[in-house]
Image 1 (cartoon, rainbow, N blue to C red):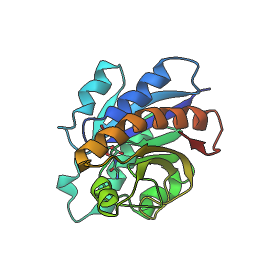
Image 2: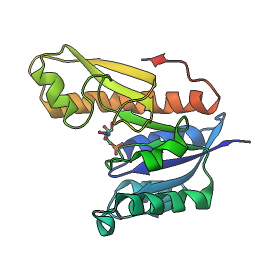
Image 3: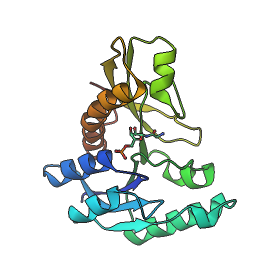
Amino acid sequence: MKQRVAIFISGGGSNMVRLVEDMQAGDHAGEPVLVLANSADAGGLEKARAMGVATAVVDHRPFRGDRSAFENALQAELNKVSPDVLCLAGFMRVLTEGFVAPWEGKMLNIHPSLLPKYKGLHTHARALAAGDTEHGCSVHLVTPALDDGPILGQATVPIMPGDTPDDLAARVLVQEHKLYPAVLRRFCAGDQTLLSL
Ligand code: GAR
């Protein structure tokens, strides 16, 4: 039996595309069962449909001020497809402990920094401002604390003189597209040892 994988996105979904492509390439213990976005405008939705993956939208805006109602609606969509694994791939809403706890050990996230450095937003600008010579991305298991949880894989990139945050983001994204599929492939096969790229 394959591991049923759901993916949450908020935007263009380039990481989601790489995850789905890798699962569809064969010889993979996971299969994509749902791509869910928190906005109908998320560009990744159309890409998911084009790859033959079911999609859903739970717009966060009508739930403003009631995070648990939003999270109940997310969980209701998941219940329809019974996933085994949940991947956050550029999903830009904070999830509370009420949602995260039942998924602990089964929910992965990709974050554009070498965690534990630079949790939260603006990671590329913060790495530049700190004068770092190296930056990267991490895939980790999601726990209730933001961008925390056991690290499953990391990929590094050099920081070049004169880099802007956009330059650095583009360089990191190339590595994200290698790291996340590689980690998910291993995770679905039961391997949670650290991967370093
Ligand atoms: C990626 O760089 C991902 O690491 C980041 O959002 C981007 C989504 O791009 N995630 C976060 O910042 C989460 N805190 P994508 O939609 O093209 O995959």
